[in-house]
Image (cartoon, rainbow, N blue to C red; front, side, top):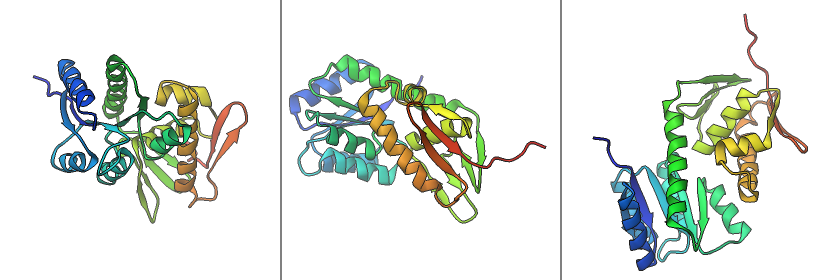
Length: 234
């Protein structure tokens, strides 16, 4: 029998939290509900969760703080934020912390499940792929282990960083179309996902700056290009 997907649900609205937990359980998930960020973090340290659904505005520890602490422990577990806020800065802040998705209240619980399923499919698809190594300049990039290795450093990447770098590497010295990258990694090419991708491009530039021969450039109106020396085929 296949083990149920385990979800950490943190929501301080008691009624909404209970409805969400019951709905997720009815859909076949194993959902644990906690009313604040402190209890949620303690639960995360003790349990093994496949995905986190975090309300942003919570007592004791808000969702952004909780997400940062979770990321310090596990850089790969998917995170979805729930919030009544719809300000662009708040949503971008969530993506900077490595969020996989962001839903503003009120929302359909069916929509939440659809988004959870989409994220889990991407995660499973990534795990099912064979190990792929890219050699770019001084770096070796292992897409399965999500590490970027050079002679003097090993850098662990988040899931989004790894997926985006893999796309850039597969189009090395060629244009990676912006809309294609958005739909491949974020599913939807809306404003917030586009801004999120810009944030990750900036992060990747910092990770690769140790090699001056590597550059990620913007191609106006089209997308990005990873410029890097690649090994010659013998």
